[in-house]
Amino acid sequence: MKNISLDITKAASFLQPGAVEAFESQIKAAQESLENGTCPGNDFLGWLHLPTEITPSFLDEIVATAKVLRDNCEAVVVAGIGGSYLGARAVIESLSNSFGWLIQDQKNPVILFAGNNIGEDYLFELTEYLKGKKFGVINISKSGTTTETALTFRLLKKQCEAQRGKDEAKKVIVAITDAKRGAARTCADKEGYKSFVIPDNVGGRFSVLTPVGLLPIACAGFDIKTLVEGAQQMERACGKDVPFAQNPAAQYAAVRNGLYQAGKKIEIMVNYQPKLHFMSEWWKQLYGESEGKENKGIFPASVDFTTDLHSMGQWIQEGERTIFETVISIEEPEKKLLFPEDEENLDGLNFLAGKRVDEVNKMAELGTRLAHVDGGVPNIRISVPRLNEFYLGQLIYFFEIGCGISGNVLGVNPFNQPGVEAYKKNMFALLDKPGYEAESKAIKDRLKCE
Image (cartoon, rainbow, N blue to C red; front, top):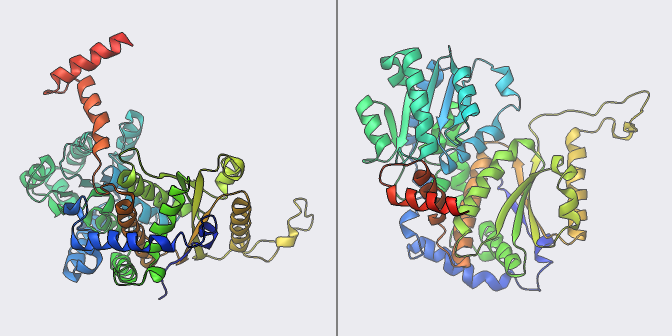
């Protein structure tokens, strides 16, 4: 099977001749620092060779656990936030029937996501939907104390036990957490839940190919072995010994850093396939949380075309020229639908009769790329042969290794997220959490003065 491919010509043309090639030594040094473990954040490099380190027996254990949930649940709720749910949701949404939540085909449980917000209406409506249903829970949290997820898991645990009894609930609640410590580990051991470990050396946003992503994806009925196989193929294609000009991740890191230095501060991830919406959401966390430090970093944004051409298209075409686009293009859709002819032709579209809908979509994609390039927007194109497990595995690893290289070139630690803690400290102080008395007084005094 061929690999996904990268076309940077419509982006490199906005740079000085040879600008991309000039990054070769920096890219090589950045990738070697990943391989040698000498880069900042080197205690979080477990993702780097994860695809080729995954064993068949490990995947078999994931599949067996997924089967227990699939056989005993009408719905499975994945409780997690950030990297603890975005990767799984990205793959599941990409592969699922767009209207699967309406069809409920009896072969696969409905996969629901919670623990990623504190919306009372959302959680109330979720618990109402689950009433009378045989549901299970995958609780994903290294600490077990992340507010959004812990709050949600407490609600779901109580409801599952009330509806199914404690003994039966234990069979359909799975914990994915730290190996030894934390509230979620303590709870899993105490209750006797089946559990999987989040490796200490893999951060959340790089964790799709750990049980964090693999178990929910398997529960949804998708082939995680093929997903991993695709990631393995891309790991080889982006290896440190692959020549710079042939390494897609190296080329991607080089051109986006070149554009950043040329004043392009915003990268817009574009897709023409609605199923890829959450792939963009996962990508935004991966790059935003990895690079946005020390007052540096490209701002990751995303649009769903052609839908957002009718809302954001004007700004992209003629707004401030601080942006570039990365387009994910799916070469061949999984289904076929021909455009019909109409005798009256009131809409004037008979010239499209007999054409595949995807041909119309492809021409919209090409026409938009040409227009945006003419309007001063550099364009990177990632071509994906099919939207299936194999190529999604490739895409995931491509973005991960590209992120690690790019962050090192930028000169930040791509694997920490110190800024995430700021809102939590204020929230805990405002909620009068024990241990935050001084912070609580300080912030309340501040609010009185504002």
